[in-house]
Figure 1 (cartoon, rainbow, N blue to C red):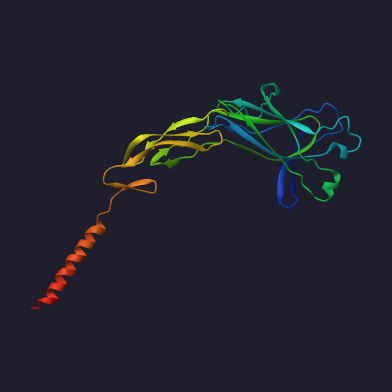
Figure 2: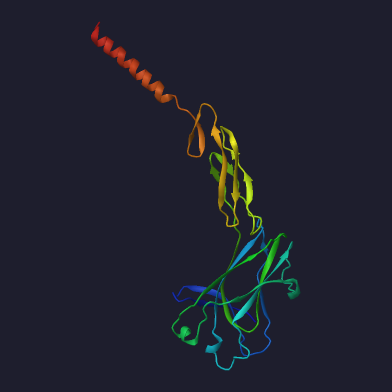
Amino acid sequence: MWEEISGVDEHYTPIRTYQVCNVMDHSQNNWLRTNWVPRNSAQKIYVELKFTLRDCNSIPLVLGTCKETFNLYYMESDDDHGVKFREHQFTKIDTIAADESFTQMDLGDRILKLNTEIREVGPVNKKGFYLAFQDVGACVALVSVRVYFKKCPFTVKNLAMFPDTVPMDSQSLVEVRGSCVNNSKEEDPPRMYCSTEGEWLVPIGKCSCDAGHEERGFVCQGKKQSSIFLREVFLTCQFIIKGKEMNPI
């Protein structure tokens, strides 16, 4: 079974991991499940795993039972099921293998060969989901699990505002219509495309400032008359003073 273990990494920083290492017994089927994760506005989620995995060749007498992979699963749900767990309700995402595995010598030298794997899941439709990890006989430690989704953030382009936008799937771009900032109007209908990587692409069209306003950064501000007025006042005062000097009372 999986166990929560406290330890330190190669920099002696405290870490907590979930570990399992039942490599000497046949037919292992050890499951670890996350808490219920709210989906929020995500259409597709990304799962980033950081883990270490023991090289089976570095463990004596386990060649028939030791594995060097584990399985990642998920299950969508509109409600938190609490501690209830049924394997058959979970869908397999992928079999996870390590690019680097560690040996007994690495343990002695405190070398942490950390692997990072990212998998996509989706589209997801229900209010939330669970992740689960199935061990089938490996010596593995889960160091961290990060779940996230990508979105194109709010931005202003060509005096048009574009809202936070979540990509729909991994294949297509989402066309988004922009709205002009205050004191501006459409010159050409502003549009942009939100990519699956959460980046804005191909700005089309623009807004322009209303009469009596000018573009300053991302906004349209009223044109300032004060500097012209002050210059006229200054010149007028200067003329009067000089006039007095030429015609003293």
